Amino acid sequence: MSQQYSGSRSEREEDVPAPEPAPAGGSAQAGTTDLDSLLDEIDSVLETNAEEFVKGFVQKGGQ
Amino acid sequence: MPPAPGRPGGPSGVAPAWRGQRGLVPDDAVLPAGRDTAGWGVHRVMGMETEFGVHAPDNPGAGHTVLSTEVVNAYADVVTAEGGAVAGTEWDYGEESPLVDARGWQLPRSAAHPTQLTDRPLTDDDGNPVHLVMNLVLPNGARFYVDHAHPEYSAPETTNPLDAMVWDQAGDRVALAASRRIAQAPGEPQVLLYKNNTDNKSVSYGAHENYLVTRALDFDELAARLLPFFAARQVVCGAGRVGIGTTGRTPGFQISQRADFFEEQVGLETTIRRPIVNTRDEPHADQERYRRLHVIIGDANLSQYATWLRCGMTALVLSMIELGTCPVLELRDPVEALQSISHDPTLGTTVGLVDGRRLTGVDLMDLYRDAAAAHVERFGMTDPATLDVLQAWGETLELLRSDPAALADRLDWVAKYQLLSGYRQRHGVGWDDPRIGMLDLQYADLRPDKGLHAALVRRGSMRTLVPEETVQRAVHTPPADTRAWARGRTVGVFGQHVVGASWDTLLLRRDGEGRLYRFHQREPLSATAQQMAGVYDDGAAPGSFDRLLAALSGAQADPRA
Image 1 (cartoon, one colour):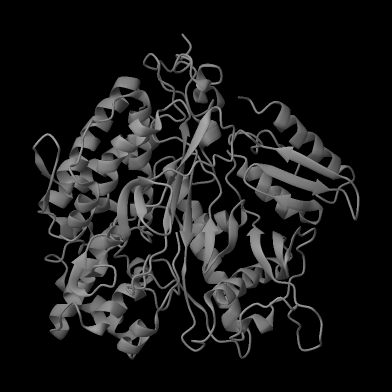
Image 2 (cartoon, rainbow over the protein chains, first blue to last red):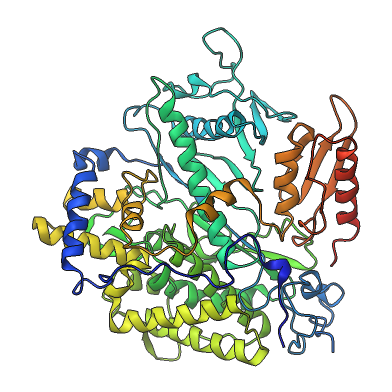
């Protein structure tokens, strides 16, 4: 009953978006070591002097 | 049997929206009597806008308009240094003048100095005047410009939620490229960009969506049907926020970045007294047929999945509203509901309806989702794009009930909540610890080596829906199925001829001081790759400019509506 919408497909590889699934560890219970290693990584990229940085992040109003 | 022509006596009785959306709305579609539609399933002309947070930690005196100008100019430099072209409007020291030729922009070093733009022309070290551009039209059909105190990316028109997400993501790559260009310039203080919505000091800025809707639809009906949906949809597409209240003064975590900054149900304002449903009416299209619904309630999403689903769910709700199948729900206090749903990441809070029921945000979304499933079946909107959204919507709501943590690989607010809860536990700190606020901000940092969403993607902990090269292609190429194609490709291939470009107009000049050619694209589905076939293959070939003029003229005369 519905038509092919060839005009409405643009440049993408497949018709169906194929989500790349997360490795086992989507839920916190199942992936504690995954979360731990993620937190290790976060600690290493976290801006030093968080308090000053956050205080200094001031914006003007937008829409 | 042709679709019903729209509400009798109303403007679209003469020119219904469905007729202009051929290719999206099937010719054999049967509409309920008196109803008109501008879309089908999840297919609808749509596009997103992002206002970026802009921050120069080593240049605290710099005004945000100056920083935003530097960002926009840096991107012009990125494109033109690669041999590409942009169209731009120059800030002209008191005069508005369209820019004829945007090639060869240099990064204005003086824009990095902590001074405000004055009414005397800035000059570089050699005393040459520095031209600053405030508004770019890009080769992918997007707009990148200074919106008062923020750089803003306004995506080109697309026809479905997946494309809308791809060209929204492309905007993040544009912003990052601009920031990196500034970082490369020796001696320039870094300018950082954030895809978020607040500084937690009472200021908020937006991530907007635009959807083409039929003019025949009564606006009061549209607004009433949307209010409960907009209050509840954050349980899927909220981006998460540390702190409650406009200054984040109350420690805690909430689902939506934007909720605390909304005060009204329906209204025209966008910067103060923000309304859940915005009444702005600038269709940039044939306004007898169409309305452009301008949605300001959304959070800026980094997650591709959340972005796609946000647009997909909303498109389905709009389809239901147009065709009269949307659930009729009325909240007693929509603004209060928006905020109390946001303030409870356990999803247990109920909000009151006028009919006496109390429902959670997930309950409300279930009602819309169930109705959408019935709607899709009734009208046979069973194309893959629509069914994918419906399936993901259902799966997401089920998991929100049974195992919300499992959505950390898809939803921004859940990913942020998991991350921050884990960090709090590891370090034994409360929600008001500065490091937690820093993590909230850093989730939205566009730098791949600093941004937390980027880190999650890299580790495979956050889903993507398309390969990165698809997004990269969208940085340089417009969608093929809307007028964005003509706009972007004309700028990209015939940039030296572009005098002006807007959503629905192209203004060209053959050379120098020659006559101006003005072409309108009042139909968003006109001037597509199909209608403009062959025009952009070789901009240098003899007669190529005339072929461009002929094709634009043809598209204007016969937009296939």
